Length: 150
Image 1 (tube, helix red, strand yellow):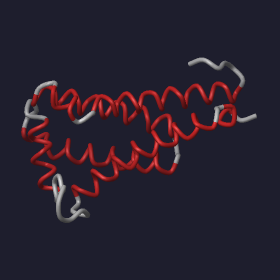
Image 2 (cartoon, one colour; image 1 turned 90 degrees about the vertical axis):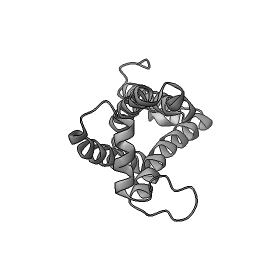
Image 3 (spheres, rainbow, N blue to C red; image 1 turned 180 degrees about the vertical axis):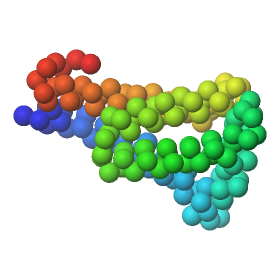
């Protein structure tokens, strides 16, 4: 019996919800920075606006690194977002998401104070990504019959 079918139905739905929430959130941020959203509640509106925000979040970094950081974050968010939404390489996408969000939250805390990443639930999203990654490791072990513990 596959490990996923051993989960009670609501657990399976909860992990699906977590995976989709993380993935769609990453893709929504990318849509914003490339101008796909119009009207109210637009965060950046274009990539130049995102680069400016990246400079503020990473105020401790040399200015020459900012474009690289903006593109690296964009590429990582796109890859993690697509993988999570589609359900490919979920444990690795979740681990990458956890690490990316920890870096982002830490940079926010350094530049704006700890209240900023707490208000925007960055560490909560990071924790969710870690839970998803650990669940995926556990599911693989159960399916292989080696153990049901992480």
